[in-house]
Length: 315
Image 1: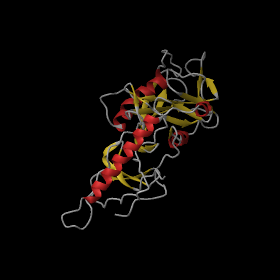
Image 2: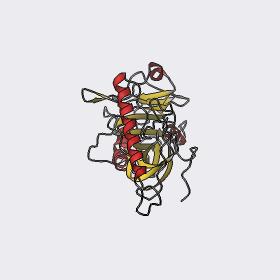
Image 3: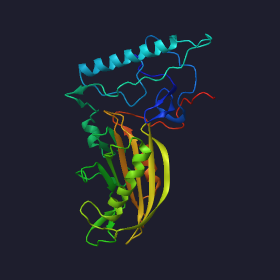
Image 4: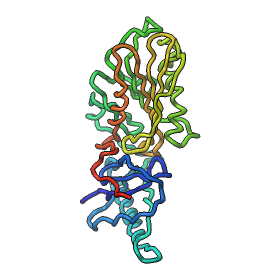
């Protein structure tokens, strides 16, 4: 049985004010203002049970999860059929129907969300960093590694190559470090606002004082913003802010805060922090973009973005 949703404009999960084009397989980079009148995409054949293009299908959790998914699918089909039956006053065609809200989790247990759990092979795979809490994986590039334990409680990966910290000769520093975490700012609702607030803390942690109060780079002297933009991450609308940082010792570096909504549970915001040293033997800044493009929902296969197979119709 096919379990796909037809291509069309749907409300963007990360920004309700816009609609994003779903190409039948993944979210794309095409967006437009919400509410523009367009014909409703015809419902699929009777043998097809569509699932919403929001997030990824939940992993199997036994009979309860299967029932929840089937119920959600039936509700969605009913909503689409009802919408198609509504014609405009002139009888020329169907009225526009907003994409319904469908939970992205299959079931709950004692009030706790049942987010997808990575398989043992996925967790042990040296080519991916698994953030199980937020339901995503990040690609571990060549020359990088995952430490044996989390750093500060956050999933972390860094370059295998190290050097003597310029402001603390008794310690060694990595040329680049990336961490993933759940955003804690409860008063901020958009990816842009969260990324813009987090970047200062990310810079302090990377180049001023670390969690133990050490100043491996002699402290942060100044910074300037070098990039700030919306970005599609694992099919969701996110936002990044990147700073160039000058330090009291050494060549300084670059920090980036990338914020985007999770596809599991309550869809809380995720923050991925990047810190790339600017000295000799450093990783090119394109590595930040490569990692961002490679972020996946656990169990998912695509990131979407411009260039997907089915583009939206011309206006």
